[in-house]
Length: 343
Image 1 (cartoon, helix red, strand yellow):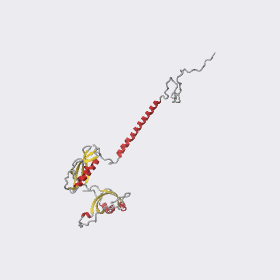
Image 2 (cartoon, rainbow, N blue to C red):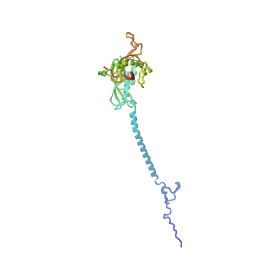
Image 3 (tube, helix red, strand yellow):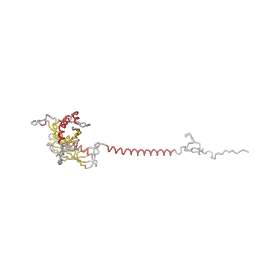
Image 4 (cartoon, rainbow, N blue to C red):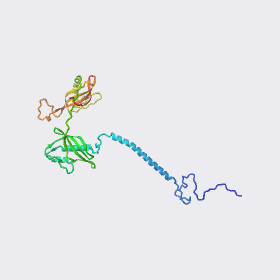
């Protein structure tokens, strides 16, 4: 009797694809070879591959967002810091309405320097100099009839009245003869072209009178210290006028380097010396010095020079010196312009 085979037959139907223990690995290592398995339709050998690409793309987008957030987080405080630490004056001042007040004031000052100076003997010269500031078609002399003479200088900014983002009235102060006066100049700003033009007739106004200076009480004075300091300070100011560095250092406090006027003036006299009683070994000393202006020989009391401009003059100046006493000698720690006068 024939024996039955003990080998279990594959229950699959002939022609079915073989099962693999690694379903993610393609059955056929040659992707270009046509498949003979299945029921006439090739099997997708990269099942799940599209999903993995979507995962990687999502990760890339996520990392890009993280980088953007980090960069913005670092850049924002850095920009705030650089804006806060930028030195004043590096950018022109702009009013809240947007009018560039710094540039507009500079333009008005230049215009005023031309407008306030004229001579009937040279009208065309003024007209040519005014042209860069006036609108097209404006009168060449801008209100002057071509006669008379006027001279002005010391033109300085006084204030700006901003009308809107494109218009302002710039007020300037100037000196003409013995008068200090104001000049208001209407200015228009062409934002697109970044240019200015005088938009109307200027107006001359009176300048405010000087303020009333209230009297200041004189300090208690140390007569002994004033006598001690007079001769050393006279020698000090001689060296200070000449710019004699070696001599100056003999009067300077330890660690202090002093610079002089390098011969621009000559020392004439120490007119007044005020040493306050308070302060101990450190005093704030006020000295009134008479300098000689080196424009000519020093005039004698009975000199009758025909041209005073050719004769050397005198100029009084006030200084505040910080003096330090060491032993029986005084030394200069600092020199600067004096405070207000006692009156």
